[in-house]
Length: 357
Image 1 (cartoon, rainbow, N blue to C red):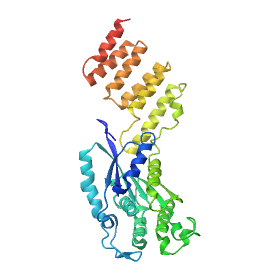
Image 2 (image 1 turned 90 degrees about the vertical axis):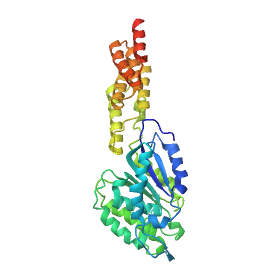
Image 3 (image 1 turned 30 degrees about the vertical axis):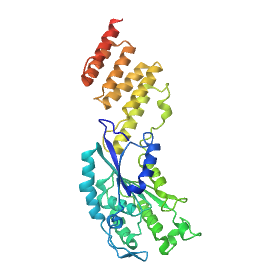
Image 4 (image 1 turned 135 degrees about the horizontal axis):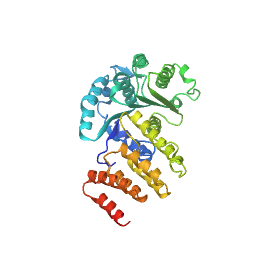
């Protein structure tokens, strides 16, 4: 995406970026703006030393196979916190709102980061995480830590793939927890984690999960990322859009809707983030075109509160004021617009309009 001058962006950090970047790009292409905010994406290659960097404890073997290097998650977390994130923040117009997305071992790393370093990211997406790591010993300690933690302002989505079909045609997601075989340990671990969070929710954590009966471990990232981001940013979508488009909506009601939408975005993103300037300007001119200049003026005045450095909004207020021949109002906003943009274009326009009366 092209970065707009003067705009700052939240950042997604995507583990296994080489493999998953295409899927996330597709989600962004179809869901940005109307369901998701625009975000910078940082893809992290884990092609080298993947098991070492993404696992939280050192083990010798897993599922009967030797594990050469493992247990380096803390060091890799330090790399993210002390090197990568500061570098991205120094080079790009970022905000403090960050997302971590990981699949498989990356999902394990994502939840480990939430448990032990929750301050690093605002939202966490774990795609079929390998929570059976170290024969579930990590899982037990993680649950002890997370259920007693203050997770205010944090969000977590867990996507669980249907690995049951790989080892049984009899078990279901509702009955697999009673199985004791090694084959089911992965999904049983995820379901145990989910059950614990639902039974004893960590304070303040926005949590949701879903089971995907038609997706296996390798296919779940695309749909899981889509569902996770739509859930975590459900506040972004314009609520009741038909009301905004209804010319009969009272001015006070329209202003209240705009304020509520802007407040929801600000509260969930952690910094001031009102509705888009372009959208507010469009709503104003829709009102003006329908013969409601005072409603247009109210919308633009609120927009100018949100975007006090916008010469465009001040210029639009000049247009509205001239429509109702309120020349004092037009002069006031013309001075403000010219002061922001430089020159005297707007004041000249007002003087010309006044002279033609």
